[in-house]
Length: 74
Image (cartoon, rainbow, N blue to C red; front, side, top):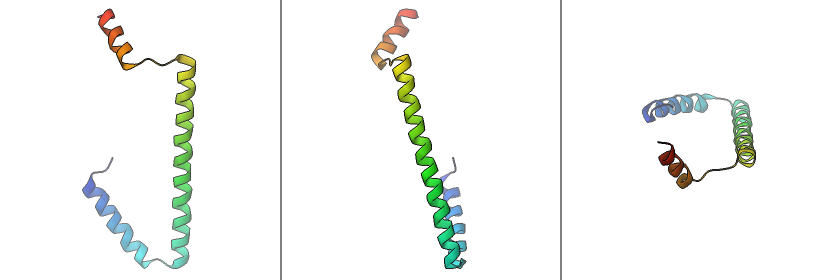
């Protein structure tokens, strides 16, 4: 994870390049960013599905049950 200052520097650099880019390049960049966003959304949905399936198969334990279990085994 980048620091806020690192992120700001990257955004500034990107903005300089974007302001110099041709319109067709901007259209391509937007299309790529949308593809990346869609892929990340799909990965998030897949992770949620896997977590639900794991919970269905292995069951879920509440925090109170977990704390009680640890006290009994300690």
